[in-house]
Amino acid sequence: MKTKTLVLFKSPLGAPVKVIKQIFTAFKGRPVKRVSFVTGLHGDELEGLVLCHRLIQALRQLKQTQPEAFLGDIHIYPAANPSAVNSATRLWPFYSEDMNRTFGQGSGDSVPVQVSRALFEDLKAHSDLAVDIHSSNKHLLELPQIRIIENFAGTLVPLAEQTCADLIWVHPMAGLFESTLGYNLNLAKIPTLVIETGICLRIHPEFGDQLFHGMMHWLNHIGVLAIRNTPAKYIKAPRIIYPNQVALAMARQSGLFVGQARLGSQVKQGDPLGQMLNPMTGEVLEEVVSPGTGLLFTLRQLPLVYAGGLLARVALDREPEP
Ligand SMILES: [Zn+2]
Image 1: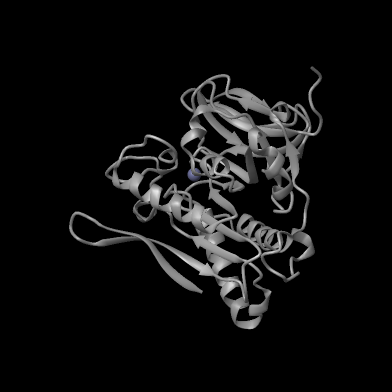
Image 2 (image 1 turned 60 degrees about the horizontal axis):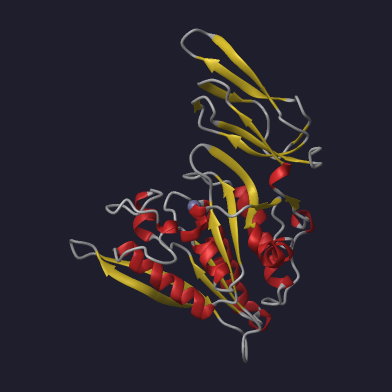
């Protein structure tokens, strides 16, 4: 493993801040493919740090015991936004800038933008494929899933099918994606999978295990590694869903949501998901029920909810009747 410092800048008091990457090169000759893993664009999303740790640990060991298993190059950027990771904030501190909204054209010349540019250029120069790992915000817990903008579905869905995630969610393009890393890499013809898993500021070891084995399985599938050691229990075909297969449970009124369903369970339309409470009067405002039959893949964790807030998402088994 080689460590490369991609960017080094100094804080106002002179302390150096580095963006680094870890590099594992092919055993001999030209790499069949070059794959990059990026995480920590949002500093409060920690599930990706664990996944990168697991990958670096396993690949270091593999380099020692079976170096010939490396047919391609693997680049891992374990903390793309170290300033934000160090303070456990989504935004880049001081600038209050969302680093995953600084890619693409016309984003100015602040330090976050300069770092984004350096990261993007490095990824472009050294990747044939990429994976950008995120967690949810503080409101919602998510099953491990790959999110795909429909414009790129033709290339990305077959790749995502080999990641052993629970779900592949193909969704329409929206303006806010234009300045994200994933969109811009895909636009630059570097197929990039965006993972969404767990919740910010927390770690779910079971999701980390699933994604670690899923990524190793995927690296084998695309020919970057030549080892077959994915435990059978982790091998699964993700469920592929399109926008009309996502049913939402929303809060009808403001209150406290107390969930009772288990994320990842198969629910039927009308099954209880939890209750909305009025803590001031002791009333139960609403029995929240499943909006459809399918896989419960998003569940609210922050109990305080305003009317219209999202409580749960269900991946429907069948497309609804038009
Ligand atoms: Zn994120």
